[in-house]
Length: 370
Image (cartoon, rainbow, N blue to C red; front, side):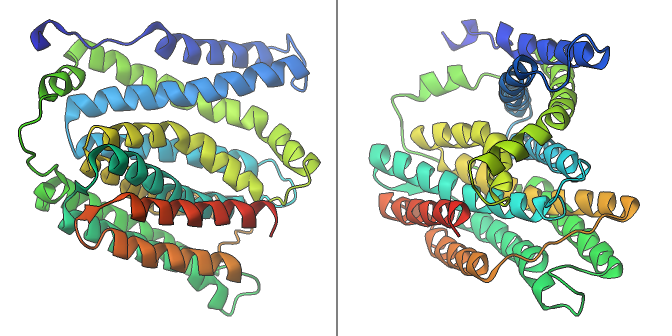
């Protein structure tokens, strides 16, 4: 039965990116006004759909490559989308553009470490009671993540530079260090200690045949098409984000929310498909894959996003604020502390999931009503 199943790209996965690119062409040739309500609404729908299309193609390529390469590819694809959204807002020259990178990175960390991880643990724990994962891989990832978070989001508050920022020299060194640490983690994850990030052997599972069907590798032709569509989707996301960034900022201001909530929206849009993928893995009792997706995307979020926006800010002379507020530092410290306890035994239950979800709710509260 498994041999008769063929992996392919559904029509929506190529139609939405193509329609998105077509909308951009219509806008560029001046057929419609860029601020027309219908254009903005359609662009928002296409942006949302193109993000899902990009992640779909990354997931298909992930199946082709196998773990942990698949999780890495998905994390990099999501990070490229995030960087595109951040840079598009930074270049719009609106008030608060200098903090959107900080707000988005912090929001992504809280969404990943509390929202996605908490949801995975609750869903997986309800179905499978107690789930296991590789302790060595999770502890290594959390050590890298904690170091990156402190260096990029907390330490800038304690420099001699005015404001929660680094000097140009400090920014170059921290950006390079972040990228190097991400690179070292990828080397360990894919080469040196790849076995730390693979699923533990499970007892005989009556659903194993179903899992085999679902995760059958696509053909080389399907994979090549997905690679091309992934590139098209990422380019479409970049340009659609640039088109919609002024509208997003106006909507947040009209709702009476602080500007920092722009970062929450950006991070949520980018991470939603990845969160769904992680939750699906948890429901299938593949918590290791969920942790690879969650922690890997959080590490890539800092290790790739911060160097990218640092280069943009240095080249264009934009001020870049990185240090988070005292309240957010408290939430970050609590998150890393609880995360250490959650991932420190190799086994999880619904209790840890509920704790992370409570922290996530408090984060949303403090973001909307600081």
